[in-house]
Length: 314
Image (cartoon, rainbow, N blue to C red; front, side, top):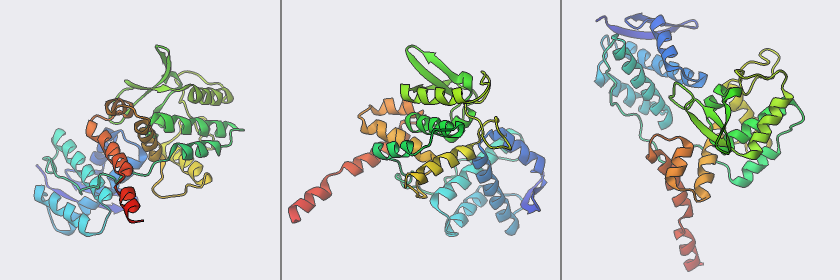
C-alpha cells in the first residue's frame, strides 16, 4: 500500500500524489452521482483534509488524524453545519477508498459537529407561501415554468435535485391520482412518487403546453436561457428561481432557501394534523427521527408557558 499524501491546487487542477491521484478523485466524484452543490462541498472538504495532513507532515493518516482534523475545523470557527458536511465528505471518501482497495476506511464512525435539532432552514407559513406564488408572473414560458416548479416544491416537498431529474414521462396516473415519479436522495432509480394536486397539475400542464415540441423522455423542466435553451434545468437554476420568488415577495433572508420549500411542505402537513408516520412517508424520510425533528420544533412553538406567565404577571 502506497502512502497517502497531500492534496493541493495547481491552477484549477486538484493535484494528488501516490495512491489518490486526480483520476481517482474524478472516479470518486462520478461514484457520488451528486448535485453540483454537493460536489463543490465535497471538493472543498477533501481539499481541506489533504491540506491539513500535508501541513502536519502526515504521510499515512490514521483515525486519530481524522479526529484531529475535525477538532481543527471546530477550532477554526466554522459553523457546525459546515464541520458536519466536511466530516461527512471525508467519511464517504474513505469508505469508497476501502471499497476500491485503495486505502483503509480510517474515518468510519467518526462523528461531525453536534447540531442543534432546530438548525434547519426556516419555512413559510401558508399565507407566505400564497404570497410567493401570487408574485410569479405567468405571462411567459419562463414564468409558467417557475410557477410550476414553485407549486410542485412547496406542495410536494421536492429537493432541487429531484426537480432537475424529473422527466415528462414521470408524470403518470396511480389509481385516481396524478403522480410524479422521482429519483429520491441516494436512489439509483425512480421508484418513489408523490401525488400531484389538481392546481399543481394544472400549473405543470400549462407550462408544458407553452413549451414547444414536448415529448416523453425530455426533461420535465428545461432552461429558457439562450445558451442552454431546451436543456435540463440545473439545480443551481432551480435554487435561483426559488430565491428570486422569495425576494420578490419580500422574504429576502439567508435562512430562506430552495430547501425551505421542502421544510414548508413538511411543516404544513404536520400543522394540518397529519399523522407523523404519514408525514414521514410523504417526506420520504428513511428514519422517523428525522420527521420527529420537525414535530419537536412545532411542539416548542405551541408551548403556552410564556403566555401563561405573562398573563399572571401583567
